[in-house]
Image (cartoon, rainbow, N blue to C red):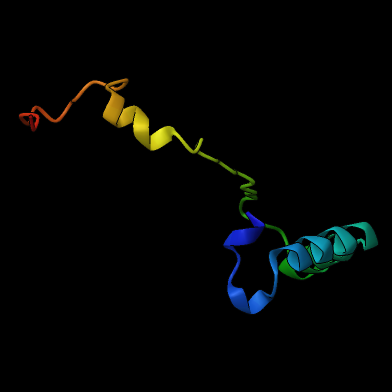
Length: 77
């Protein structure tokens, strides 16, 4: 996750350390509180904290035949 950040943000370890430090200092809580105060009554509230990580061997599952071929196309021999 941290390695996926833009290079202009600096080294991934620095980004992680900054995130932890700001979390402990309540920076994100204050940002959200300020945004909440300015926004008025919301029509809807949504928070998406989805994080998916595929195992490093996931692409080989398709080659190994774990998933059936649903395309109907002939297989190369």
